[in-house]
Image (cartoon, rainbow, N blue to C red; front, side, top):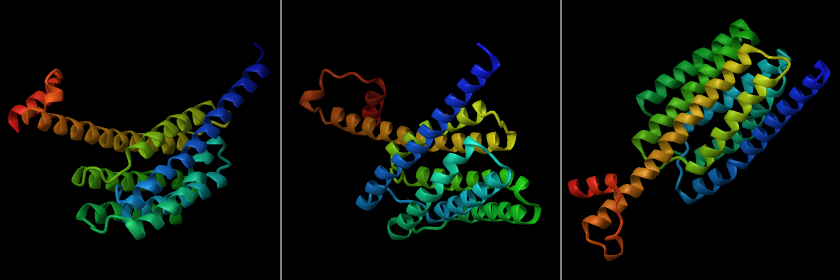
Length: 233
């Protein structure tokens, strides 16, 4: 394979990763909207505001830095972030905790750093702001299980993996852009993982309750974790 062919192949892979991550980022908002309207999901107003502001700054910074495929996901998140902000105002979690205030302060300092030092600092500072927003969501979800949509966050996790892949395969490779993509992926992984764990535990508790009640259709089921929960019920 010649260097030109290798370059063409790399560009094709990068474009495929970036395009697919963008499509998934759009798709994930659909179950999130449905779950929010049904009251199954309670978006964080603080996290929504931080995320929207930081994505606006990230896009501005990446455009100034002439970033490539890594720009796709932040652009999509401006649109979905606006939708999430509207959902948060109407259906969201109203409690503001000390943790929310701390994370908001971190995000504000990151924004000030961008305004003072410019776009190059913004590519580092804004992912930190996004991490603060994600920590707000993670903490809310831990305190209030089931308040984030599992399907939506699982799709976002896949989109995050593909976004990192698009940055790595991009010919105009940039460590700052990679940093932003990796931070985003770590956040998606943590929130999706916690949401799925909560679902698994909820199912185990329901099964354990059924076992402890001697449900006739469950006598043949043996699940060690559920059995342990049933013994302690």
